[in-house]
Length: 214
Image 1 (tube, rainbow, N blue to C red):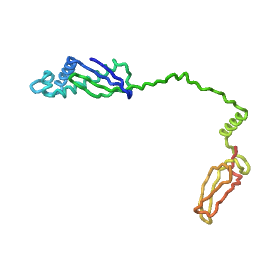
Image 2 (image 1 turned 90 degrees about the vertical axis):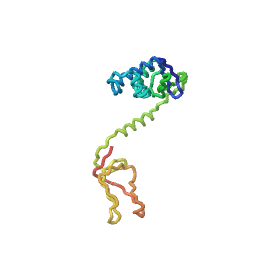
Image 3 (image 1 turned 180 degrees about the vertical axis):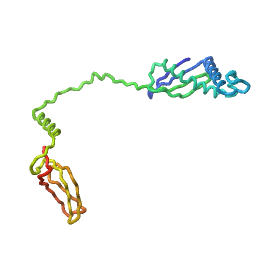
Image 4 (image 1 turned 30 degrees about the vertical axis):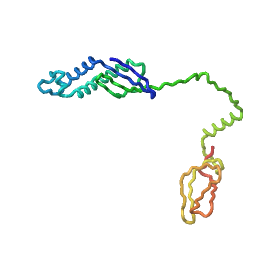
């Protein structure tokens, strides 16, 4: 068996597997012996039909196809063991010629990456000065982020979180109703619905119950 390889541009290697006439004949004879045991060849008992009789009855192309199925994987693995490339995944059979025998397989391989002299690339590194003000701002932010809300016994103030039941009416019609709504009092609560109200309404909540602060 002769194995040659050619690297292609698209991270593939073309592998050619060549067998001489004696090797091909040996593979075909092994195949016809197997087929003679599986099929009835007129004039012969199962497993007793000679090589030429099996080819005459089943056809040379059918025998060649069966031989390729029987031995193709073994030829591929033997060829891969001889080439200098490591397959990325199983190769794909591209073509097979029988006279002379040449099996062509496309084998995907990993791409080659040239990093160049990356160690020579240097950027200046300057340590940024950390001021006390920046530290205080950071710590204050951490405190705000991890602060817990706790109940308080007083009227609601700006900055409090409140849980309220909201019900809004226009005349006798209820246009909004929400229960246990959580609100953060940062500014006046703006409620508007231009399609139903002629003017903008404002609501200020002054609550003594269900009020929390942090």
